[in-house]
Length: 223
Length: 199
Image (cartoon, rainbow over all chains, first blue to last red; front, side):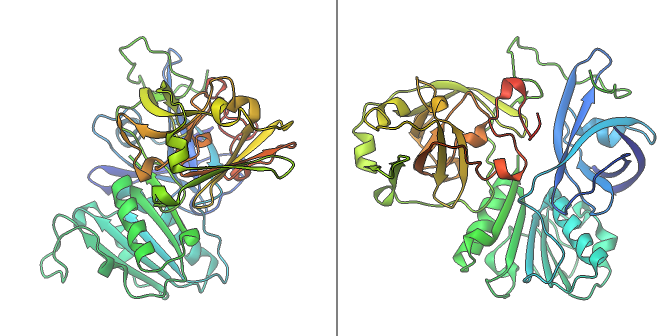
């Protein structure tokens, strides 16, 4: 059983929830949990959410207007309230700190959550692995973890791609992710792509077209 | 019953449809896969059944299309919690494909183009319970849904219905596949909510 310990507002529609979970066994960056909500009459609903931090049980939940679980988590659940959490789950879409090869992270919208866990795991471990994060959102106001991603960090290169509206003077006109947004790094990197299905399909196809090894492209899709 | 979440009432389904525990209904067709979508031209596609003695049986795309097909309408259940009702497929029953395959094996390890694998008891592929399908909703099966050919085993969680089907190894001993070695349940019965190891 988890208890909500603190929350942070990420955007107008997304909230980060930090839970205290007695006996939590720890997890790897990229893993997820199942959240189960139970009504007083026993009716239950459950959904999966990626863990967005490597050290604490932290979830960033994007409110889906007609959703059943996310509006409760973003608007109703209060500090101290209990929630049933199961996990960690998933052993494939994970990054382990170490002297591995360069890493390319490609996030679409709230697909940033598990990739942020990897960015934070790298920092926490003092890893020298070079990371490049390409993060696509509709507008600058949709960026999760905006302050944290703005802070310079050696070996971490962050590129924002805006699809609807960019800040004034932004060098790239708003539009969908293109192969040019991926930079010119070598194709022998480990790639993690997370976001809505169409986004992941097209990003993964771009990586293949650029000669990346399909076995080193890990994907996670939602919606 | 779990811990009650204060202020949670949920959104009950209006229909009387019975879903497996923990599932919710979806109308669209989510895509879930662990890597990029493989694109296999039909003329290069080939399906192999290999028995425990090493004997191989092969079918090309043309040979598959020449086999008698069925049009199962089935409900499907994904371990990520969505269920989709009344999906329409066209394909060949595994009973047809395995009819002339001599085997004493009890297990099957299914493999895909792209390297994915999943395991299941052989009996779960027989007796009208499984098909290899190449059409969905009256259309060619799209690559992101496993085209040109995927497995369809609707009575188990959908990760057992391997996309981009390439072959089946018949084995005398169980050999866990991709998700099964990553913490997911070995069998995956949605009605018993066998999501993860230990369920």
